[in-house]
Image (tube, rainbow, N blue to C red; front, side, top):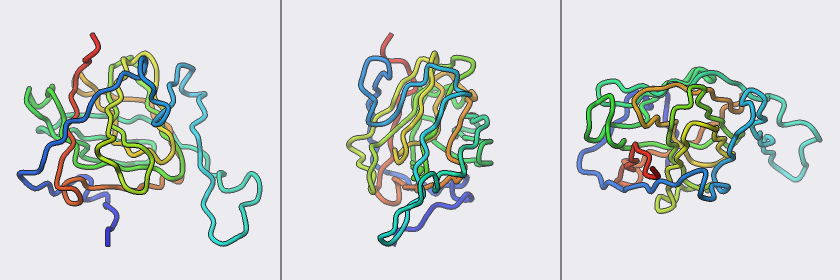
Length: 216
């Protein structure tokens, strides 16, 4: 039986040697259809309404109208910082801290790619990322589904002039700046349900995401 990944494990992942490396293709959010994964946010991010999913119920009786979504959203800064070859994400909105990847080639503060060991999705709502400094970034995603379909993984590229709001249930990892460390405005469901996958332990692989703009 699979079990969830604890906060301790997210900061101290056990990654075996010799795992298969799967290259993730980059898609440009401006020129390709990303509607399966996310919304483009060109308005004021502080006014953008992140979608919230009504709380699930069991049995035959439905939720009463306007209930199941009352927790609303929470917001804050999401920082992505390189430290000793690890990309560490810190999400102030939910007081979370995670190792979201490992440096590949280049130097430890400006690698050419990142190897991704983990993804999660939020069944209670979407998640917005917006660079107030217009820093280009990449977000790795897999379509909504009970199990992550690795062969459908994409890396969404944003040039930093707009935001990306992931849809509820989309598998994803934190935001990857392509030029070192950076921070981003984030907003997500206050309930903060999180469902995770460990690619190494479950699929004997890591997902490799290039840190570059391939569209220049």
